[in-house]
Length: 289
Image (cartoon, rainbow, N blue to C red; front, side, top):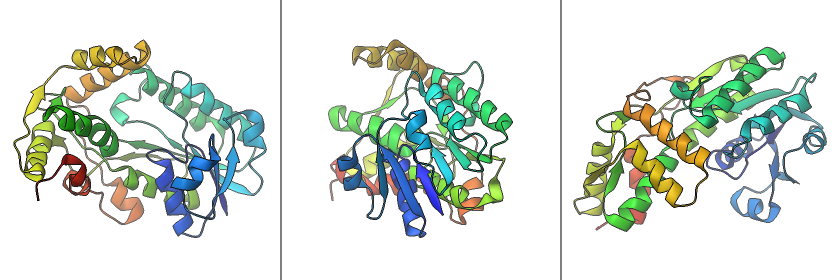
């Protein structure tokens, strides 16, 4: 079989491609930059260069049995995904959509989550074979892209969620679930909620980072409003700054502390822990060994 992968070079997409290739599945990857994609993806992947459009999708479906639906985080993300769904309508192609954390996927949730909610409703009523994957927040984003740079710059862990925890998930575990559902119809018609093995607080993350660095790394208490202000100061669009403020408010209220066993049920492997992820990125934390 052949799987068409959108978002093939991102935090999750690159691992989806690797999982599929390792299983012997043919992969056709849509990318805006074939040269870059060929550097980060394994050999044997067929590339389709361009941006998501009706013609590009329709021209890429020959022999395709499943599509991994992931488009860049953006103001018009929902419209791009709906375009894909319309393009494959009336076919038997399975759509596996990567959505967002369950607690935020509501009609009045944060901006990107409202878009996910709308796309999910269309999928559910489309008659198309589908699976919706709702991962909790990624370790690679909240830790790797936010906490890690802050620690390196200031020696502190910024905490906008107070005493609450988040059951952070490794993007590789999300990809493993996606690859299984793209090649196996067992989960068709289901919404799979994915989390890490337990909810962890930022105080615990700071403690573990302190151990790895060999230096005390205190928590810097901030608010979701502070996050918004910082993002606006860095040039982010207002809608995106608002989105992240609302997400941190949900986290602060404990709305992402829930834990599911879905990763293990689908992949037969336990999800990776935050401790394991931090140990992997320890060199970037300037570990004193």
